[in-house]
Structures are given as structure tokens and as C-alpha cells.
Length: 266
Image (cartoon, rainbow, N blue to C red; front, side, top):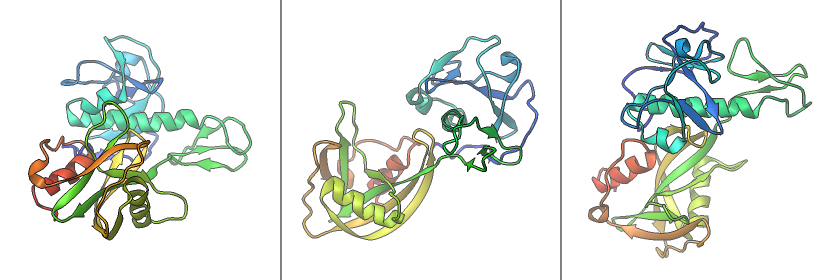
């Protein structure tokens, strides 16, 4: 998956000083400043940008900072979808994680309690206000659900032209557990009742600022899939041999489908 990189990822906040060779992430309209193509993505350095702002995290020995556009270099702004396809994988993960943090910083420039400007905390990754309000990075829990029945798995398609076969997914609502989210989302999106809800694994998902929690479960009762035609346009049961796409090495969804296809999950 995208976060499984070949160097350590250090996300603890620290007021570290930037070095000329460290990376700078510049955000404009949800796009990041980058150079190169999807096969060799790279980000500007502190030396190229003439400075850096807030420390974000480190990938291996490389420190990563927020920054502003400036300096030299043949760079362009790329979308999240292009970052998703980028290689090396550690660059894609760094870019999407930085985008997640920078969007949060942009959304919390002013206090939601009193309206005054917020400032960066000196001791932790938080935005603070003189009125006592402290805001931490926004992370939204969501579930990815592999529904099993009679040796098959339920795959669905979102109601958009470019949709691919995927798993049922949805955000956890206030006052419910992740397991309750699984039952509710499956019922809402497919009409199926499920039991035997089993946790699989999790994945940070910077594209939507989420923490994805993967579950498998079993359909009980009527196995007819009934999508609403609004959020989802199609749903059907697939046997392992009917799944003709490989694990993309990026998403929890594809890993879970691939585990079923290889009969590691049944």
C-alpha cells in the first residue's frame, strides 16, 4: 500500500531547522509543486525555494517543510490523482501526506470559536488561539468493506463515468463504532444484511484526509444487491476467477480484493 515505503516515516512534530537539501511542499488550489513525470517525481528543495516554513515530517533522513512558491527550478503544480500514480512510492506518499497537512493548515488560519487568527503551536502539531482553542490535524475514520457470500465478494461501482469496481466504503458517523459503520454502510449502499464483521488492517489515506479501516464480513439472508442508483450505479457478486485486475500496490481496497482473489480470505 502507499504508506509501505522502504525508509522510516517520522511524523512527530519538531521545530527542526531546514537544510538546503530538504524538501519543500507548496500547495495551490489543492495541487502540489513538483517536477518530473509520474515515473520520476521530485519536489523542490529548500535551496531552490530560498527558504522554508513549518516542519511537516521526515521521510528517511529527508526533512519535509511547508513553503511558498519561489526560487528556481522547472516545476509545475500537479493534482492528487497524478501524485497517486507517481513513483518512487515514497515520493507519492510524502506528497499526499504533505497535501493533507497543508490543506488542514489552510483551513485553520482563523479560530472557529472567536474568529481571530490562529498561530502554530511551539510544542506540538496544532493551531492555537489566545482564547484557549486548540485544533489538531483533521483525520476522518472510514471503513472499507469486503462482503462475502457463498465463495464470492460484492464489488460495486460509484455513479460516475470513470468508476472502477471497488468495495463498499463510508465514513464513521458520530456516536458509532467502526463495526457499526460497516453494518450501516453495507445496508445503505447495497441493501444487504451482514454478520461476522472481522477487522483486516488499516491505511492512512491522504487523498481525503482519512484513516481507512478494512473489514470483511458475511452477507446473511437475501443476497440480492440493491444499489440506490445515486451514490452507486452497479453492484454484483464476483468469484475469485472473475476478478481480472491486479493489486495496484497503492490502496487498501485493491489489497483486500487481491487477498480474496488469491483465496487468502474466504
